[in-house]
Length: 509
Ligand SMILES: Nc1ncnc2c1ncn2[C@@H]1O[C@H](COP(=O)(O)OP(=O)(O)OP(=O)(O)O)[C@@H](O)[C@H]1O
Ligand SMILES: [Mg+2]
Image (cartoon, rainbow, N blue to C red):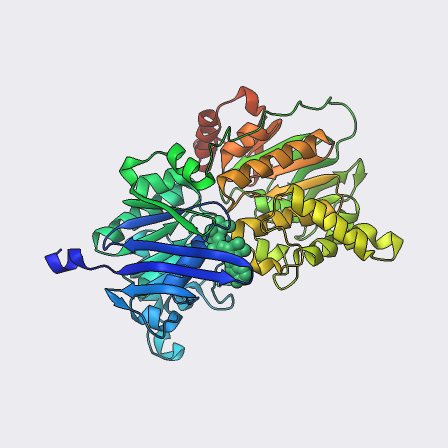
């Protein structure tokens, strides 16, 4: 790297402020991004991380302050000019075209050719790019058919195809497995060695500390500190993010309920065409039950089938002792089974509608018998739920799309609880949620169980299940292979078994 290169400053934010209505999203923030560095931005939900990234990428323009690219203040900054200047962003909320293939999405708009022309050699060029990073994506697959982790990988390839020299990655790892996260970290390091600057927004502080050169902490729209990663530990970051010390990551495990009576949910030998081969498990009142498995083990597919979204080809689903195999989703809701989905945008929330309206949409089913929707009661419920989940800002009339990612996740939980279910199924409930808010959600899960709800928990952060669940089933290759009491097992044991079954070294049945 030449001297002038080392002196170059790809991105400088100088006294940047940005306001949305009454919310001061960024307040006099100054940060310098150096060439060839991985620079992480951490902070609680709503701290302003995504807003900062979007200003760099030309999505928003600041109200005040200057953005300098390679030393020059920008004018007419928008996503197009930002891209021309070599800046790419992998947004927190993915922006792919569902009806195009993976390869088409990767190269779409990257070159000024018509897609028809571009198609020749597309898959070959894609293969070369993909091989470089080792994702192993199928270029011909339609994006609509991909699971979220693969959509995220597609977004990453998209920015690489643009030869960007600054890449903003806004929570790119939120649904990747530990292995995939490792791959991405290796990729970030190799990009930075080539001189590319990476702005990495993540709630995974271990990953942040492994991969970063520099870390910036934000709180309430303000810049708190920028430090070399080697000078700080996780605790320092958490304290700076929260402005106080976090007592403990997990609440005490609630007492397991007395076994005996009819289970809330009993799934026996479930099979589907989507990859579920033979899954059996039950959940009782007052119980938190986890499904432990690697991505692709069939957990989400199992949930989709049991709530009636996908067809069941074998086995049975019983709710409170009655056979409900194949009942459609609205029926399962009225039977008291409510799924909080993994993909909050596709399956969960109407972004243009307010928190109150989103909550009302789900409780409509619960109230259908009364025939009328009482708005004042609705407001009361919504406010209570939003308050107990610490949704910030606490404004239930604000459209969901205007909340930060983590607060949208809380809105989704509020929506589930408003339906007054007996059994809450949580698929990745803390995805994109910060350490403080995670604790809020863990407390809520414990409280649900203590109040007699059944909770079925799916999480790629296995620690969550190990710390919260009374019982957990190990899932691999579409089958439940064993069940354990997390309090009497270790994460090492569990992961060891899951990896061995996944790699075929232990028989699945
Ligand atoms: N388009 C918008 N309209 C109104 N308010 C917004 C908009 N975008 C962001 N905000 C508000 O600005 C603040 C900062 O949001 P931002 O999305 O930058 O947070 P974040 O740090 O990325 O949080 P998270 O970790 O939850 O993703 C929040 O209070 C949010 O509600
Ligand atoms: Mg964000």
